[in-house]
Image (cartoon, rainbow, N blue to C red; front, side, top):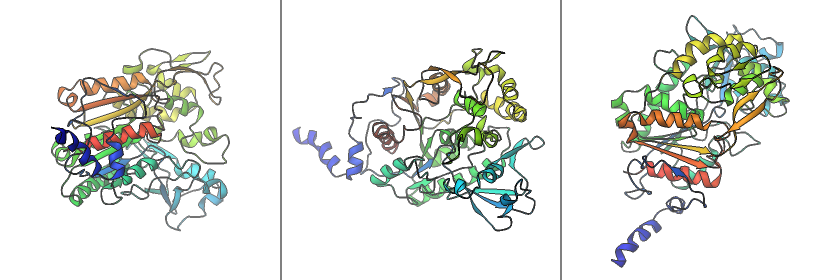
Length: 447
């Protein structure tokens, strides 16, 4: 009996050092809050059969995809220098962000990144004469590299995955997307995401074939978590069951929305970091407001009810008043796409019907109400905070959990983990929370 008790330890010592570390149950003293009804799909805490790794596809957050642009003769630049690259092929647009101010290209960047909503097509598109594409699709090493934040965009996670045996292009892949658009729900058109979903389908099938038919794990962080869910929902159940082993989602953006996008739309976003551009949020705000991704996660009435979310001296705005809010901040052009594309998705939910693990940070002050008392939307608002992960409100996370549980077959395959003290942006970079993320990826590998 003594020998049998030692057997697991002996087997553990035979594993690679990086993998061995993640099979330890300790998480630096932090105790996650696992849902009692959500036992891990598949069982315990290690990897069976000699630690065989299933291929994994990483889908990053919203600012992490690099974009290239090609300018055709149809492009009519607002400044002469913005047309300097017409007819000269593809070049980096959202790539090395440090190059933008160095080459005085920020106004051109904003113009060429901006989208137009086409009401006839019910879809977004580039400006005439502007063609864009995503760089480095398929590689986990192809995400945006920010020189001042080298740990952003799943870089630390990729390094940890490689440390336990994953290899880029063999078992480890990346699926960047065009950050300006949002994945559609059934009944909506999206030329950009239809093409992306076809690419992702081929990538997963190829990854499975490359690995003796093993199913793939899909990992999504933040906006990437929402992309993963909508991609899976766009596939048939037969395809999912054949090709997808597990979804691991870290701080996925919930369909019920949250408050941060409201502030970003009003006062500007710093998600697209361009060094030397001050004030960053206000400078880039005209461009940001044209993105579908800027409004797709506005708070829904079903989750936020009638409670005032934006407070001014003249009037308050609840989740029911977001169209009025869009007009009040001076961008009425967003009202029609909000009504036609965002409102329908607020009432839509379809469980992926796959083993799914969701990790969220909690216990961090997170804005629940924004006070622009003087109606000055250029100024930073006063904030009334509640619980969440600094970006996503706890009420939105819990609403998502409840939607997943309402379908009994999905509930059996669903695991939700709340990590006190984990922040939205650093849940995949801080040592203690990253360790838990890695443990869940390894758990997803179990036979």
